[in-house]
Length: 440
Image (cartoon, rainbow, N blue to C red; front, side, top):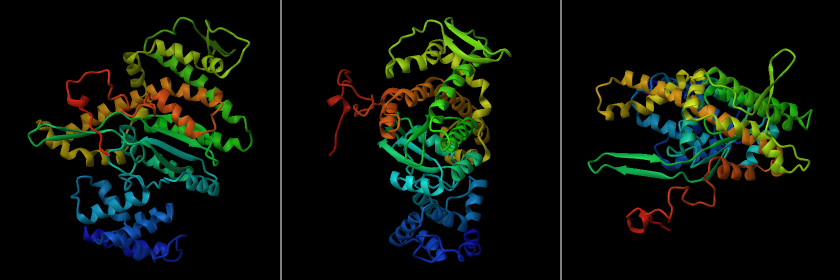
């Protein structure tokens, strides 16, 4: 470890000619103090690096680039005190857990994110989650983002180059410890979903991706939304057209996938074709036409196709569809490196005779299938509702109102339920106070 950290000075030559804005301390001193064993000195240096924005993270990560790359290539490397201090410093500056492998800087202040967006001309990718992105036990969705999305080389490059990143905690993530009574414990979070909202430079929503998407699907969606952002300068109506186009495209893709898995177009749905025979739209034969247009009737008409398709897409059909899109869930070498680092001790604790290599291969195979399944569930069952809301809802320019609606009506965890559906006074548990305790 010592020889790798000794490469610090050559790397710092990149930063000695131009001092990053906001830096009060010489770069070589700042990055050295960030890893100090003196907690106070380290905290002050990290705070200064954080105040520099993305430049501070770049300074720290480039200064120790050799050691970071060694850890990525060898996830089974011994965790030394020096590496623990470096990874802790990186996470604190970036405000993301395991940021050594993604290299992403996240704003946690919405006004600062909007200021950065206006200064750079980039849209904002605002993650709303349960828990905090810089902590191990944030909600399950966000942990998967940190594992299968943000480390991905193409995803991290796109996020760095084309977006200003911001995250905001909606509420704490419920956490449980299962004590087996023999020294073994399991720690988990219960429930909790996350959503990536793409905002313009004023913080107004353009689109949003609910839950987990596979890396390739995530990239396609973000690229499409970023193009809409660029077009908004020339056409104020482009955003509404985008949602209508995507609703239509999702329905057509959905029907095509049902047919590919051996299913038939549900009765009552009509595929409208162009003169060339290509599918152009989905129509619902039973959809009543009304002269009175309101938000409710507009929402019903926009989501009618997806609603009908949803009635005929059970879990078994959805899994067949997911298998058609396994390539969208393919993990790259960097994500696999992080997964290996986080699971190697778990394989030993499992107690089976399966080798760690075989266990990892089995885990990755199942994980990719589950990611593909989540992708299709989120794109086909949830995303159409979001597209419709962003057209019909009068509050569509209010990201906080949109987020509240998402958690209440998509994720079914409304702010009005402090127990997130995990406790009900109507359910008897045979435990004192229903097993509830509240500390103040």
